[in-house]
Picture 1 (cartoon, rainbow, N blue to C red):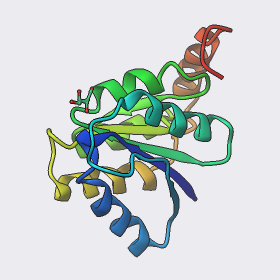
Picture 2: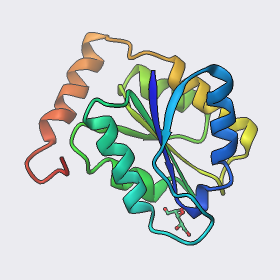
Picture 3: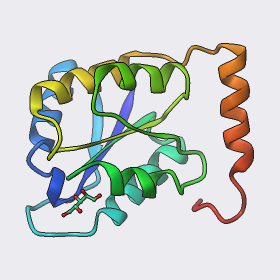
Length: 151
Ligand code: RB5
């Protein structure tokens, strides 16, 4: 599994904790920035990660900003991306099972490192259910993606 990760300054402090966890699990990842604590626009990091996942080069994406909201809004503008904005383990598991989410977003100003790890663990270890009704709904989401989405 290959994971694309990105943060803005609002999520910068959680990134080393996330990387340490992925390293320990032996999971391959690429850090798409940001690379310092200075104030930046979350948009470009959400876009870089989302495009990397949408292209198929990465299996999943993880985005952290202050709240996770800006990142998730941008990610969900990219064709092929279903970004779940999750601050609890149940939602992280369900967004994989039911929505086949391929990007996870959350906020460093909302959760701490311990909960983050549990959320990430649930997200990356849960497969899409493949259930017919959930697949139908995901396909209806895909059908909404038109030429105006970022490719
Ligand atoms: C940055 O101050 C903050 O607005 C950003 O990290 C994020 O929370 C936006 O949704």
